[in-house]
Image (tube, rainbow, N blue to C red):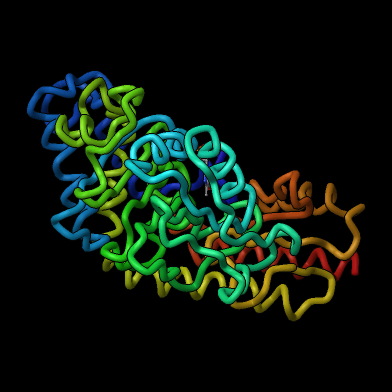
Length: 360
Ligand SMILES: *Cc1c(COP(=O)(O)O)cnc(C)c1O
């Protein structure tokens, strides 16, 4: 079977060139006579893979020297817990800006460890926008402000970085990291599960400002403590070696593509093509405020939900997979991460046109 255009929200499509390289190196990585899956993480070959991946990620995101980069396990969901345990320090609470289900989950988990202040939420608007800045109630004494730059389920993305007046900004970048350049120095902590824009699931990247580590609550387990993980180069225990290796190949691939500026230009073109088509065709609609629409996850509904099953069936026949929307929102969702080609987006638009013509 030939490869499909895979619009899955995560785990998601990866660059074909990277998959082919993994395949070529599977049995014998670089003359070592073994697969990366089989090597000791403490020996030189894996250490060189690990260090190259960090170096390339630092170059891609232009990460300042006073930030640690950690390669962890547990997914973004584990960070919902790590963050309050590590960052509360001597404060009592933290602010959460909630623009979708992931931010809501992060706040719920954090509430077990500290006082959560929902500084802003667009839940009353069914998470179709970023709440108006004038309505935010940020607490100047908060340990940190948490937000979700891109809400994967609702397709809501912040166009710029919130101002928090010196309170550390913590961001769940799972579904938008590496989609465009960002100014890392504006953040206290950035985290992302790998399976959207980086590589296989099982790897979680944390980029954290040095002064924010070393204040973990006494009960924090060692492997949840950023300081211990940083001191041990993310190898306090066995790291997610294979995911780390594949992520490193993706970083090299993105650098070879021209870095994040070039990646962003392509992502913007892809998103614009799809939204422009949806907006031009009354058969489809996307409910998100235009300024807050995601470049990565594009939910849309058909005029008649009874046609959903037919739409999905025809899509697979047209080699388009993973388009079923999240159950919380319904309809469809096209996830068009970095590794989705412009050709794939055009194939989706062509199919949508044909379907609308046949059923409109
Ligand atoms: C996918 C996703 C998560 C959950 O990630 P896991 O790695 O499965 O824990 C959390 N936040 C956002 C924004 C996501 O897209």
